[in-house]
Structure formats: C-alpha cells, structure tokens
Image (cartoon, rainbow over all chains, first blue to last red; front, side, top):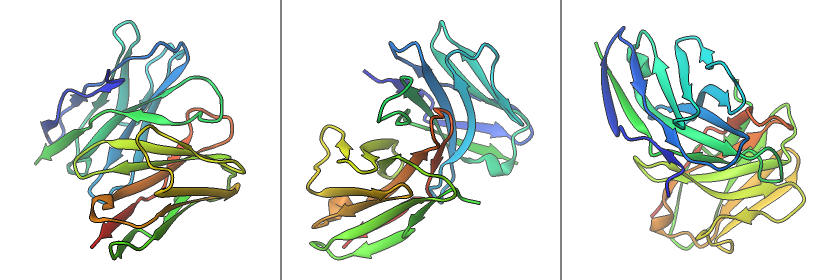
Length: 118
Length: 116
C-alpha cells in the first residue's frame, strides 16, 4: 500500500493566487515527520517545510504553510501568493520512527507538477 | 550554500564501465546517508542506507553487487554503479541527516547518469 499519496499529478494556479497541494499518508508509527520538497528542473531537492507528528500547531515557513490533519492523515501544502518561480515538481515525504540506524530515510509521494501562470 | 555536496553533477559513461558518485557532508558529520534514484517524471526511490563504518542496507530489489556503497568516513559516502547499462541511466541523489535531528535532512545536488 502507498505510504504517501499525492493525488494531483498536475496543478495550475494564477500568479499571486494561493494553491493547495494534497498529501495523505499511512503509518502505524506514533512518531513520524512530514516534509515538503520542491524540485525544479535542475533536480535539486529544496526543503520547504516540516511537520512533526507531535506538533500541535501547523507549520509555517514564509509563503508556505502545512495544513496538518492528523486524524485524517493528511498534510497538505498551501502556497500563498504564487510566483512564477514556484513552477516545479513538489514532493511530500514521510520519515517514520524515532531512531535507529536508518533514521532519516524518507518515503516520497508521486509528486505534483505545479505550473504558475502569469 | 549547499551543506551536502554531490559530485559529479552529470556523467556519461560507456556501457559496461563503472562510475563513482560522491556525496559529502560539509561542516557536519553524517553517520548516516541515503541514496535515492529517480527516473524522469517519477518519484524518488530509496536505494540504500549508508552507515559509516558498516555495510550499507539495501532496499528490496536493489542489487548490492551492482550498486556498491562505501561510507568510509563521517563526511563521505560513495555510490559506484558497476558494469553500467543503459537502463541504469537515471538521476541519483543522496541525503544526509544532521546528528540526532529527525527533521534536518539535507540533499545533495544530484547526479545525472547517462549510460551509452
């Protein structure tokens, strides 16, 4: 079964508008972390935002916010005031567990290609 | 600046040869590094977990004799693709966890491998 599901292969948004990228996850761990990364065509993975499973408040980083709904196992990314430079692939990822030698490995969703129109 | 440096950024090699990709942590020690592979327009798939001073842990379906991983120091892990074939052409990217933190994970710039 998919551990991380991104159901939107592609999304379009008008410049300066807000957009929500969906992510649902599945885990039996109590301790886990959720990440969002941006991947432009160059390939680099740019960290955007992190939400820990025990964090009670939704994470925010500048124009990025994470709508964390633990009971629904969803961690949607909200980008406010979209810019042309936001056009890229976006990945949701999960880190499970709280330690061990493989602590830090991530499971990624399928990704969403975001296109920002002028 | 980058805290995880990966080299080379892109490489073209002939079928049957081997190619080495380096992943270095800058300004921090990384006891654990991770290697992922990504085919065009697809997700990142974990290949293996690289632990300093011990054998790498490979994910199911990844050939450990083909993808050799060495983590000889606290700042360097290498991935060697042995006897490369065109189907090994892909984007390879590493990541490193900073200390005990579970939310500070840095990625290298990635390496594009083309086997001709």
